[in-house]
Length: 386
Image 1 (cartoon, rainbow, N blue to C red):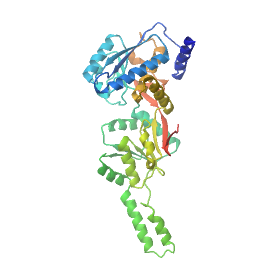
Image 2: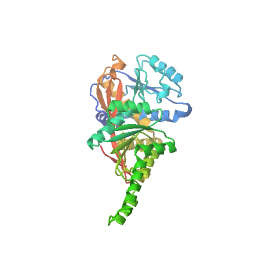
Image 3: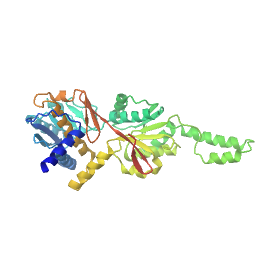
Image 4: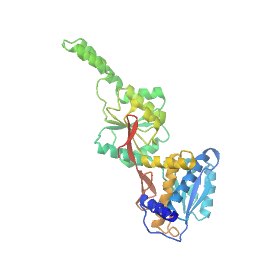
């Protein structure tokens, strides 16, 4: 009975990940795991180890071997551990987790590193960003805009370090925007900039002028019209139908609140943001709803969280789920290729797709993009759009 159950689990894994049945039965699949196991980020590393073990149990293949090394969240330690993995004849490594630890990895030849970072600029040639990058997110936003025939979109981008990544994503996705505005995150500067972007002062003045005009007119219905106007904050339209806010957490809320202050409502204009990882605090912000964003598959994420909690009595972070899928991706590639003879670079060169719990991975030219889902928060609940 136990053997049958294990077989079913293994077959289910193959079905979920869309894997070919070409198996190299006697080939050892050695996967490196380069993660923080000491210093401040060791909890992240421990979660990744636990998740990788879950993935291996689900695959149920005795030929998979995981070799774990500590990065110590330091680029020099990362390089040392990476060389140790190479010396054990490991071609593919999951990790490092953080972008800052990648800088010396180009010294480790004939090894591919699947980093959990979502940054794509300035990567060594042998490092592939496996995180949910800006191109993947903006491709999904573009799909939503096209499906809903939304033509006039402005893009709000904070003046922060990740701005270059977002600009690269805009270029790669070919998302059409009316204009890209860069803003300061400092609250007083932000408010003034949003006022300018939305022509708030002009629209405010339009309202005051129209009330004065009616007061001085002979219009028999002027009192009724004036009362209607006094319920408004501005008069006149803004020249966009949707706004993409490339921000997160409290800063995202500040931008959205500034838009509300300038009489731009999410009930009349689409408020769209980047991947919020199902931030529950947004559900409580009724005034900012509806708000839309791309993300990983919510159902799979919640199932994984529940399963992880039942097993380890802690809730995982999203990086650990990504590591689960990367184990499946490497196993998938091992079934399609002879791991012992295939050049590691070539494994990610050819165009292919792989279905994981996060969603579909698209692989081409040593790059990974994700086909994401799209969600709406409205009336204090999250709904999948597609």
